[in-house]
Image (cartoon, rainbow, N blue to C red; front, side, top):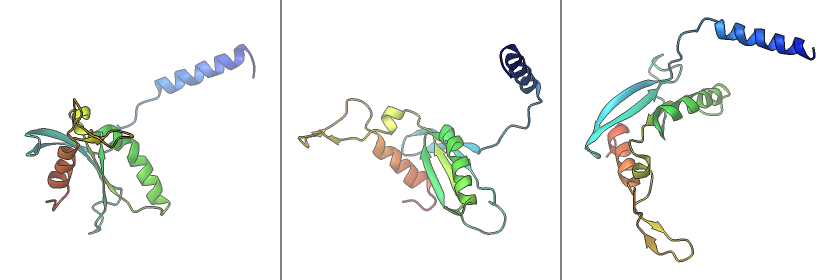
Length: 143
């Protein structure tokens, strides 16, 4: 098929796809708002359970991600694919929203390249608090 016939066929296919009824929305995880003692503010967490969760008393490992729901959406499919292939176990995926990424994801101190001199960033520097939030307020039994 060449020329105008190809363009007409492509247009018909696009119109048909655009008019197709929408299916039910995909549910990737549950969004929770939690109070944080570490931050003194509320934080958003997205929890995505594996397909076999709730079927028996199986315990599942947990994968914690920064970036919240956006990263959970990206990672859930990969995790499920790898689990179906037997390469990893089924996982619970927990995405922690970054309320302020420059604050939450940068180290408090860094070593200057070449000299090793300790440098404090002018902005951010809250990675230790972010890790403390995950370790003590999200991981069950955290210290």
